[in-house]
Length: 168
Image 1 (cartoon, rainbow, N blue to C red):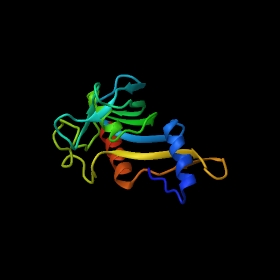
Image 2 (cartoon, rainbow, N blue to C red):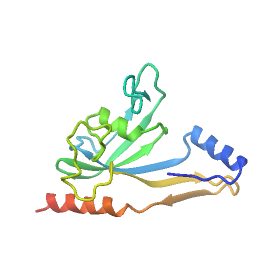
Image 3 (tube, helix red, strand yellow):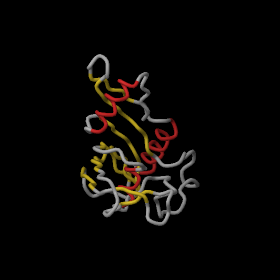
Image 4 (cartoon, one colour):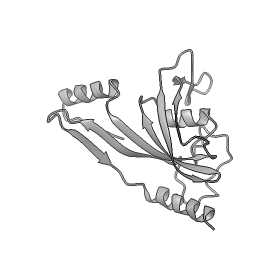
């Protein structure tokens, strides 16, 4: 998600909403494996990976608090279509949290130990993660606004493939 502020005041107000965790951010993703629970929370601090500096990791000692709430939208045998609501906004938060519970995002080459999946699913473009909804209080009018982005074509096509595979 990207919010563009036209002035410093708008930026400060939105930054405060981010700090207070009042900006609503919902993501959709497809992960490896079949998640047992219908919903849950991963509450684990995230910081730089101690060795691989381009990666983030669960870091109890030097990490910042990170909370991800999840809900299963649909199960496809070896894969699960999920919704995530973020309480915090750490770099790679969903990717790190899901990998930490052994359900990395489909197509995530950085945090997944699964063999590359690009060959299995035609048209897969990186990790299957989509910023679906963002909601915030408008800095000038004080009105709550919410925006919803449709799934990208490759993502919707992949869901259709998974649905067809599992309903034969």
